[in-house]
Image 1 (cartoon, rainbow, N blue to C red):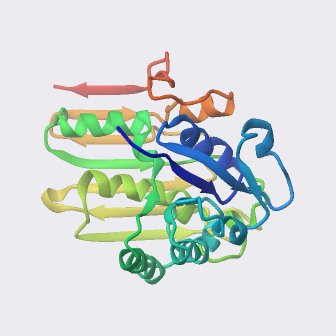
Image 2 (cartoon, one colour; image 1 turned 135 degrees about the vertical axis):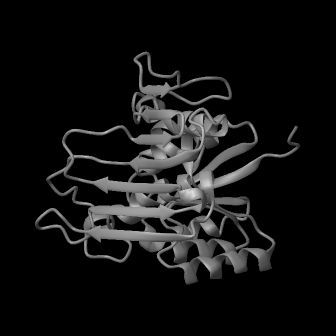
Length: 287
């Protein structure tokens, strides 16, 4: 049992702060939701009236009570804010993608080690129900010798979202950093580092400044190939995971219920709180 509470500050109260960060911190008995950064609004007051509101990250980092800082701002700010937090003596959780370059990532990792601080990248899609179903099939070797796997994260969005940090002419904008960070992480979790890779990254939609299409092909031992693909011009969706092995095939649709529950206002708990879909969402066909 934990003998103290970890006081936590969150750098932004946008969608990420509202849905993916604050509810979990509040629900966990080992943490206190101490503060948010809201530059001009006070939206967090409605749901978290006991927490503080700071108008800048600098102000929040000056709070000596806060031990842990969650960096959930646009990727273009991750390096600077994470470095500031580490230099202020705070442990840090930083959302994916970690940084724009591997050089920045290595520098921050070294700084955290030097300061004897925890630095963790937030990869929440490792815990989605659909991915965990895929992981279970692979670990149980239900398909025999796995030969091929595809991971899709496709959408149909022909109009811009208006978010410059995701779709503008900025470093790390585009779906390769945004969605690719989830899919590549899942492949690495399942199979480790590939021995070779092929990448095709492009912008398909007219008027968009950042990549909105990519296909990666990861080559592993024993002829295993993992294809990672995303397109914003896919109206008819394929299964999100397609696995082929010596004994058969497994198709898994993207069906995790957690995000839907968050949007509906449900609060996570330490018990089962996001039940699986009532409708079939996968097909396993083996010998």
